[in-house]
Amino acid sequence: MAEIKVEEILMEYRDEVMLIRIHRPDRKNALTQSMYTALTAALAAATADAKVRVVVLTGSGDSFTSGNDIADFLAAPPTGEESPVFQFLAALRQFEKPLIAAVTGMAVGIGVTLLLHCDLVYARAGARMQLPFVNLGLCPEAGSSLLLPRLIGYPRAVELLLLGEPFSAEQALDWGLINAISADADATLEQALATAQRLARQPAAAVHLTKWLLKRGEAEAVQKTIALEGRYFTERLHAPEAVAALQAFAGRRRSSE
Picture 1 (cartoon, rainbow, N blue to C red):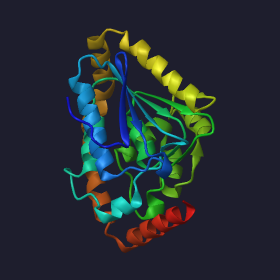
Picture 2: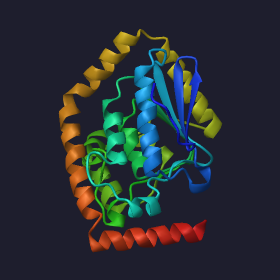
Picture 3: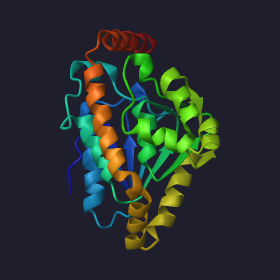
Picture 4: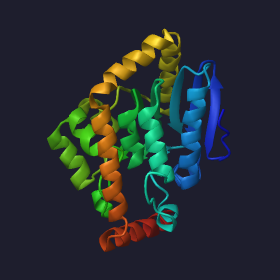
C-alpha cells in the first residue's frame, strides 16, 4: 500500500470505506503540490487494498477546498502531465471504485471540477461554490469544459465558467450537479458515509462493472479534454494577465487571513 506522509491529507478506515480528508482548515484546505501527491497516493492505496470497497472524500472545518494554494502554485506551476495536480486528475479519472464527495463547505476551482468525477456528491446546505478560472486569466481544467455543459447544460455552464460567479449548494442541487443537501457539515458527512456503507454491501464486481459502463461512453473524450485543457492551462499561467490576476488574488487572500 502507498504511504501517505503529508499531514494535510488524512486517511481513516470505516469498515470497508476509506475516508480521505483534506485537512488544512487554517488555509481553507487550499491544495499544495505535496497535498496533490498525497491525494494521488491515497487513491492508489484505496485501489490496492481489496478491503476498501468505497472512498469518501471530504474537507475539514468550514471548507471542502478553496482550490489551489496560489503562493505554492506560483512558486512552482505545473509544467506537464508529470506535475502533481495532473497526476491527481489522472488518478481521479481512472479510479474504478465508487467515489463519494461530502462537500462540507466552500468549494472553489478544482474543489468543484473534481466533483464532476465523483459518483455521488452530497453538500452542506448553504455551501458556496465557484469556478473562477477566467477571472484569474486561466481556462477550465479537469475536463470541466466537456463535463459541465453535458451535466447542467451549455447556457448555465457558460455562466459559471465565463463569469465565474459563486453559486450555492441549493442551485447545484437544482441543476443536477450534486445529489442531495444536508442541514450541516456533520449531517453531510454522515449521509455520504451511510451511502458508502450501502455501496460497500453491494456485489463489488457488479458495482465496478456498472461504474465502468456508465463512464465508458465519454472516457476517451474526457481523457483528451483533460490533456487539452492542461496544455492551455499551463500556457495561460505565463500570460501577463494571468500572472497579475493570480498575484492580486494571492495578496487579497493573505490580507484576509
